Amino acid sequence: MSIKPRHFISLLDLTSDEFRFLIQRAIHLKNNRDPDYQPLKGRVLAMIFEKSSTRTRISFEAGMSHFGGSALFLSPRDTQLGRGEPLQDSARVISSMVDCIMLRTNSHATVTTFAQHSSVPVINGLTDVQHPCQLLADMQTYFEHRGDIKNKKVTWVGDGNNMCHSYIHAAMLLDFQLNIACPAGYEPSQEFVDAACGHIAFFDTVLGAAKDSDLIVTDVWASMGQEDEQRQRELAFENYQVNAEIMSAANKNALFMHCLPAHRGEEVSADVIDGVQSVIFDEAENRLHAQKALLEFLLCNQ
Ligand code: CP
Ligand code: NVA
Image (cartoon, rainbow, N blue to C red; front, side, top):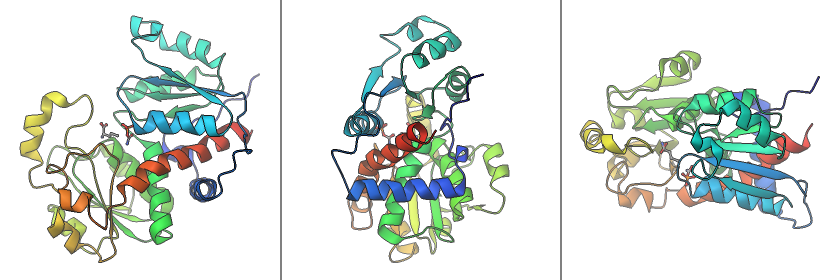
């Protein structure tokens, strides 16, 4: 019987120790780039994108290349996936030819179904429900700038969406407090809230949530696939902007993060995202280093 591959669909696929190991490994790989270190020589990553991407695509493709491997960009438009070939069949076929598969899909169930039928590790490159790869990079960024995040206070502002869900998981694994300020009707899913026992707290105002925080994080008001809701969301989220007033309620050395792409003047003011507390470009770059650590962990540790 074949051994089940190790997938990365949720942050909770990692233990706390493994998450901490990946953060340290990513920092090491970033600071000690060795072109002769090619642990994935000849290995292939297939990347299936149902939605657009700049950071996820480039970081995985560059990461595979640094490690001596290669990556295939597969769009449903150009493969039989877009013509209705069953996921089960696609997963079996694609995984018989490559060493790892990354998917960015509209529905989380697509990734979980795919993983059930894949003979190689499957990585979640963002679904409607979770974005675990982004959290590897965000946490690496926090550790680099401020050290361990354990017992720190993090504030999530805005949509209780895929990013917020993965922040809840990070709070559980790395043991920090997550304050959440979401408009009514846009809270995180109950199953994530229920699982977070003691790590999260809800606030009616952004100012209240941001008080004494060490890190303030937000995301777009309308995620990919929600473009039709833009107007309605602008109204619902109008009091949910991270601006200088919010940052001044946080600790003096608080950081600002955003997974990008961002809309200046909506979820964050330009002076904050382009200001001294913002580490958005480190976050973006760290997608590369964190995912190299992840690929090495999933593909070289068997
Ligand atoms: N943050 C992030 O996942 O960016 P992309 O959509 O560009 O991949
Ligand atoms: N919440 C955003 C994240 C983009 C990286 C989206 O799903 O579009």
